[in-house]
Image (cartoon, rainbow, N blue to C red; front, top):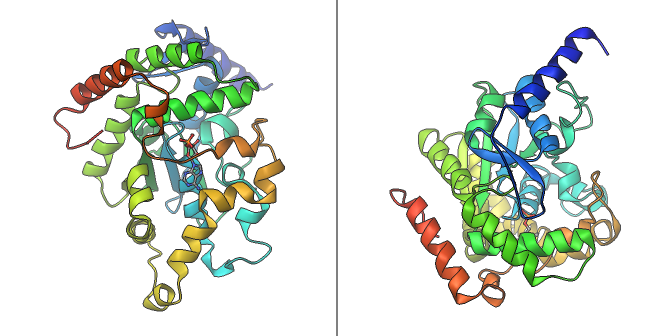
Length: 319
Ligand code: A3P
């Protein structure tokens, strides 16, 4: 290893060990960096990303707190940009899972190095994703006017979705005790990529400061008014639907292609795994608004609602 890289690595290790640390519900050590919590490996990826990413002005970044609709937003973005391909057999969504097409910068591309090979990324424009909060992302973008699309979701549904996802990945039955400890982590804010509220508020502020380059979407609105939201996304990405496209049903076609039911049943998503070994299938569950009601007690709901209400006070965000 060249000497300068060795020094970088030492610096990284020393920076990480100087950060506040705590233990999450898994018993995993998390470190607090720029107001949010990460495990060691993720943090190394973030530091590499912030140091080495060379943004292009046309880059598009799909951002989210985990389990907030990332897969859907990635699919919609790919489908919008590739809409000339319609349903042809070489449509990217038929060949790979949305997470393969739009890789997470800090979890996949920059985990090992600050100078990864990005030549295999879907290009023109390049599509990336991230789960880091806005201030951390902005540092990595170094003033480049990339387009950032953020999706957020009700905290309770994101929590229950995460519980299912963790259990599916561990191939265990859903254990209530695990949900309860995850709930405590969420409430205390010491959770992977958390606190949830810091995350959402960072992008909300970012979208107010720079609405041209930061689009702030809500999962629930994508569900209840998909046409409106998809058209908004297309305009934001400078690829609005033409009148002819609208008349010929292009909006509906993309929504159908990216529907949970359709994606879940594609061969690539029934069988494949991501580069990190997660079954594609685990990214698709129910996709319902308010499903958390079936799992959280009334007390749990009240407690987390009160926390979010307090944290969101002063913003116009409705939880
Ligand atoms: P549920 O667990 O509530 O069903 P992420 O993509 O950020 O990991 O979020 C996963 C959540 O989005 C899961 O929610 C999943 O079912 C839902 N989801 C995945 N693909 C979707 C799609 N095409 N449309 C709507 N929801 C989708």
